[in-house]
Length: 317
Image (cartoon, rainbow, N blue to C red; front, side, top):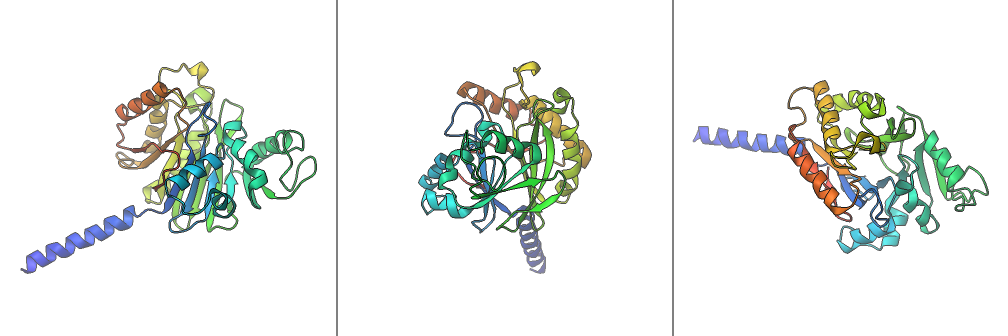
């Protein structure tokens, strides 16, 4: 009898430890998950600490259409307008290509005051080419034309940790190469001791003639070892058949797995088994998307938990 009680106590203890280790830290609501031509479904992900409504929007290709999908799916029990104005506390923009900023621009007249975060290169492009009183009204608090001061434009310094206003989260920016020398950005989001990593568009180091991804893997390896990094958002835009000269600063399944093998080498064998990788920016047509998913599953020798997000359907990390 004592033996049975001891075994039960051990099982309860192990179950409790497992739940603690794997307890979700962030809620994610994809507003847009594709690259390419579908203007109603372009890169944008809401991320908030669990049990809060303090969302930061990672890129902003599609906003309103994605919120409406989430409302239809009962992810949100309020109007799309209320989500836009009250739940989204700010925007982190990885780079200034239109498929990552068009939702921010179009929705700005209906939005509330908040902060837009980007590195200097991206911020200059948005101010000079979009919010410039010519292409679009200047809804920011700096730049050309007449600033309407709805948005606070905050420039991020690479490798510096910055508080995200009206949340308990912070962000640290890392440089990425998206057709060298054009810059994109990775954002490491922290809430207390929990982290999530989001990468904007990026090519593999081997093609980009860069070491940006290697430097990023080196920086995040310790928080993967400590089980504090809950997942990585990373793009795969094309299937393996896409020639290197036509990647245009993007990844294929093969190049993604090559990069993640480099990450594993920094941490140890089997260290990424079960680790969550959120696949973003798959480009149409639909047969390409099917092919990308098949190739990723076949080449997943690391035992990664691959997540293919759907617009308006929430998940946890």
